[in-house]
Structures are given as C-alpha cells and as structure tokens.
Length: 156
Ligand code: FES
Ligand code: FES
Image (cartoon, rainbow, N blue to C red):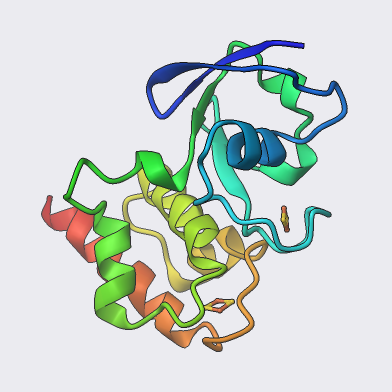
C-alpha cells in the first residue's frame, strides 16, 4: 500500500508499505529518517519516541497505516537547520549523551514535556521520562539536561 503522511512538516509518501509494519520501520527504512532508534521493538525502551499528531508515542507500537494522514515529528524535525533545539543543546552541554542510542527518544520526550509543562518538578520529569531507558548515564546527567532545557525554555 501507499502511505501518505506529513513528517516534520513535509508531505511524504511511502510506497510498498506492508499493513503490519511499524511506523518505526517506515520512518527508518522507507523514508530515510534513521534518527528514531530501534532498540527493543516492544514498547519497552522509548528509543523510538516520536510525536504523532502531537502525542508522544513509541513508533514501534504504531502500525504504519494508523499514521496515514497524520503529522509525525521525529528528532530530525526538532532542529531548525544548523540550529539545535534547546533540548538538544542542553543534552550536549550537560554531557547527557554517551552511546547516544537513547538520546533521540529522550530529546523528543523532553521537548514534549516542556511544551506542555514549562516548569516541571523533578518528580514530573522522572514520571514523564519513565518510559525512556538509558543503559549508560545513570540518569543524573539526563536530569541535569532536562533542568537546563527547562531553564532555556524559561529564558526564551
Ligand atoms: S524500540 Fe520502541 S520502545 Fe523500544
Ligand atoms: S546514552 Fe547509551 S543508552 Fe543512554
């Protein structure tokens, strides 16, 4: 089947989509957007987090046809040209990136959190990111990055 959707503000068409394939597969393998990571494919790790019509979802759990006609935002859609999104800047500045495999999903989840809550408490941050696993950082640097991103958002 042909699948039409809007990805990062651009109308895209994916050809030869199998009705049972995941949105994650379509984004990575058919639309050339490898920023969204594939780690567990079971909805357990959050590395594939994207926004689907403004709602954070695990792209590995969304059947691609469910995204027909929808707006999808991936990590590639957060930066503006060469200018990183404030959350991306904060992750770099806080040293919250080690292997980087969890980072795209976390960046999308944090951007979504801050878009809905400009001043999240540490508890709210932990709750919002509970579905995003990181095997490298021990999470403290990630919390630092989120606090930094919140401060940047407040200053913007
Ligand atoms: S790859 Fe989707 S949640 Fe892990
Ligand atoms: S930086 Fe390696 S999994 Fe998070």
